[in-house]
Length: 403
Ligand code: KIV
Ligand code: ZN
Image 1 (tube, protein in one colour):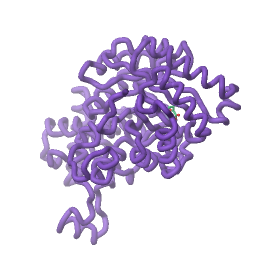
Image 2 (image 1 turned 180 degrees about the horizontal axis):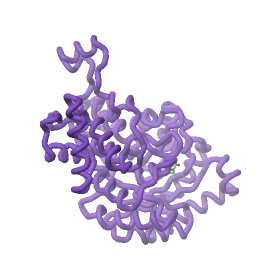
Image 3 (image 1 turned 90 degrees about the vertical axis):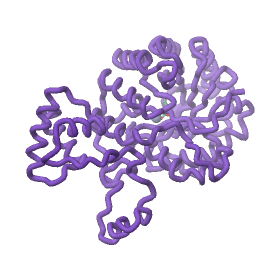
């Protein structure tokens, strides 16, 4: 039987599904920078790419496997369709990783079978079984996804999962590919799988979801209550169309409301043990790094990492917070690594403090670029008493990225 984790496994797919966001392309060096930061953040698994998709994706998976996929680092994963060539390419890109995982998938909804795959259910069953076994001939750690599970016939889903587990899948991932389900429905799908797939105890149940109706995080939290133990998510929720479930929202919901979720993981309600391995202090920095490198701006009212997430505008709220933060804050900004050092930058700040704050924001500049940005910073600081993190990013964007 597979060892059941007593915590929630965080599977980050920023570099695979996240990079599928329109307009968000990353080069190999940028992917490597993000992967290193994801390892510092403490994610358990990095889906580094889709190795067969392009030579660039292959190289990114391979270099991340080599550099970040060390014995004490995260598991490194590559996506592969349930096709031999994809699986061989994923296995070859993952060779240097100490803990490699192949994630193979095939659609199971009738809509996908009829219009996309043009295959019968029994053909899909056979392919899933055969390709999981084939992937298993390369690595032990196999994840299988029935794509569009959210719209699949549950009875067929149970059969496919049973066969995939029998063939060697150690994680079965349930994707709500088109973000169609509601939390109660998604929770019921996970419960149905637990109750009806006879060998489900041999695998970890994972969930993957898109945000077309803005429900991905809520769906995942309901899935956790029903037995899901791996969450697939991206930094800032980037991804196909409306994006994926946001890592920072899931992690902080599980952290802030841990007393509510503890019993679902078989823990005493008042346990203070973290529910994930994530170092929450690294969240803000990771968010900024991903936003800066992908060019995908974070909306100001975005939960956890948006510019306004910890801002209080109305007089009544400001008054309350000054008297006691608990009046209007359910978490401390320092928990996500925001304004950790309390240094306020202004016109008297030196180049060192300026560079250090940029580093905390995930912005690493060359010596020359740092000097250029510092000159601009001094000009802005002359006009403004205090320079916010948003000012700093604007300075860097104006001076460096558009130069
Ligand atoms: O959304 C989806 O179904 C996917 C699969 C490849 C897991 O991204
Ligand atoms: Zn997806």
